[in-house]
Image (cartoon, rainbow, N blue to C red; front, side):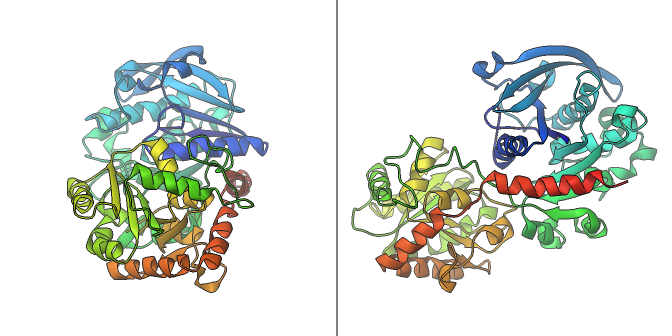
Length: 473
């Protein structure tokens, strides 16, 4: 089976978050399972020269963008068994960063149309195109509107994956003719709520729609989570499902990770204590045996940081220490820095994101806090488990699908349901109580280290979905 994975980002070439992690890992797992999965992404200006030197130029062609005809160069690179296609247009993509430009709509209209034009110029014939988030949502729309009449495109099935429904690609209707290239009279597939909505179009036309966790697939049928798309999703619920993301267990491996102070495993977890000692030194914490709760996150409201803000003093005065790494809204950055000044030795804060330091935190902390208001999947809780750091999470989205409360003697973390600061505090205090019983805590740490969130498991679920799709008329 041949799958073309269309994405606006991919580790290690260009990434801003979870979508890049998924694109960098899932196709590799699919290829290991016998699927010919290839990835297509823009040739961004930020892609490093070391990657560019491995690319092979294949050809160039022109892409219709409404009334324009824009150049596109096609490059290819094969790495770790996966073939990557890079689409080059310096006007659209030779810029710093991936998103945030005034013409993002036009940039990703070009990219979406170029993906389909590319298939006319390469020898790859996909059975399935998997588009991801709003940046590639129009691939599935354009396929139906402009390409179905050609033999190469006539039998292609389409999957649309929602990584975060909050970002839908919403623009004014004036873009329809001049940028999107669809006449207003034919644009009902894209119009929604008085605007053009790229994600709405993909949900409408795709053969299947999936989210990155089963619980999130259910949640987005509710107005609280759906950001306005719940009526459409309820109507299209027959094509909606959820598949939990995985993590790259080779990269995140405490037995081999060179970036942590000492290597350890579920069988020999004792050296995790050396990682904790390094963390204490890096953040100038008191070395008094207190449990360390870690937060590695964007410091924004929907990550639940306001809950932390309300009860952080109780956590610190309750005999726990806190380590924070992240950046985001100024009021949260300022809040954590203020706590660090007021409680030296009890809380360490680093504003920004430093991947190497994040690894040290995952390995050295005792607990990992994720009190999210919404969380489509979440990878941090899985990475924390991989390093034997016990998650404390709100039962939402992918957190509910990956973490169960250890109060039953079988779970792998501590959970709470209500979006309430004191419910979160209670979960932290329950974790501390178990921590103080070293035998029980060691059992829980070993259980965490044995959890399997590899992409190979998730890949099997995707293969099942692909097989279901290719049998559709």
